[in-house]
Image (tube, rainbow, N blue to C red):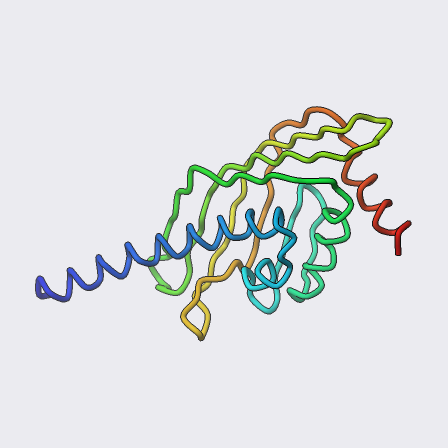
Length: 165
């Protein structure tokens, strides 16, 4: 391997790290903005998700509907995604895993059970480089560490969306 080839591979790896990290951050930002097109673009056409016990294989449009039904009921949310550790698959240059922390704050104005809900934990995001060259989340596992406040807020927010339909 020449120095130029090695340098090109190293630069590509650095670029891939940045793109993977950006995609995982975009996931968090898009739900807070309620930008469902941007959220959908974070995933492969078919995706496996595990949100702390709720596991499903979905088309990405179905995933948008599932997440939207819960989050649109909140007054406001803030999802932070720090501490990205990215591991590349040595056997497949188009696959990687991003481990990241999760800090998810939710406000549900008017809730008799409490207006604030905080969830902390981490995500394991299995990433795949797609045909268009973009990194997308193929599988996402949420690892819940602890919750504070109104732990029934997600169900209550989902009910609000259903009631308004």
